[in-house]
Structure formats: C-alpha cells, structure tokens
Length: 156
Image 1 (cartoon, rainbow, N blue to C red):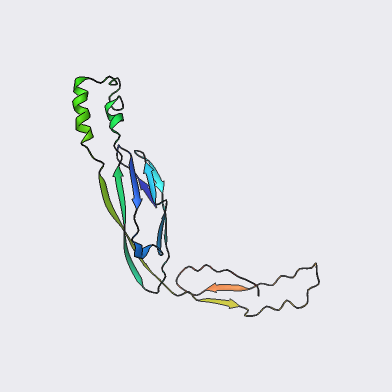
Image 2: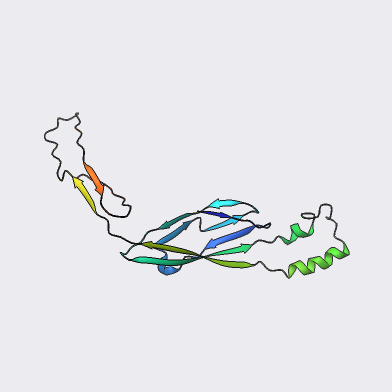
C-alpha cells in the first residue's frame, strides 16, 4: 500500500502492532519520515497462524514535524533572516506549539485456512543412472485449497 503526506509540513509515521498480533502482522518500513507531498510504499504482511476469521485493528501514529527555526528565518518569508522585535514575540509563540500526533487504525479482515495439495505421480522411480549422466522426470503439484501455499521440495 502507499502512504502519502498531503500536508505542507513534514511528518513521521509509525506502525505500532499490538503484541498479540506481532507474529501474524508486519509492516516494512515500520517507521518513516515523509516530506510534504511525498509518498512511500509500505509492504504489509498478514500471515494467519490459525484456521479462523480475523478482524484486526492496527494503529499507525502520524506526527507532524514542525521546524520552528525554518518557520522563523526566511523559510516561508524570504528575506526575514534578521531577527526583529516582532520576530522575538513570534519565537516565544512557536516554542509553545507542540508536535501533534494523530492515531489512525488500519482494519485487516482475513481468514486462516488449511492448505491442501495433491502430487501426481505419488512416487518417482529414476531407475539406474550412470555417474555423470542426468535424468529428468516431471511431477505435478496442485494447490486444491482456497489460499496461497508456499512449498519447498526436498529429495530424500
């Protein structure tokens, strides 16, 4: 998924996955800094460990990164680099502004399922193979379940 900062100030976001879901849900990156109008991709992985339906609420916290110095010295008002009496009053006001953190919740709805595969043929007989020669046989692996399966084949 993509996260975009539509604001005019930089922000930082951080995913805080509750402890009970840490083995089932992950985000990469878990924390990032976004400039104004910047967008980033977040890889979300949901790996259910049980055969059941899930409705998870995962919080993400977004904090504005308000740069007080850039606001005072010529960032928004070019040529205002000289501190004047009026700017000194503004300095006291901006120091009282705190970074604002907002919580958003991402709802994940999914289900865990049992995987079922069929392998055909059940046994492979390579017969006698002379050293230095190769023989290739085919096997069909069919996923008969309603979920994705990742398999690793090993020869015994």
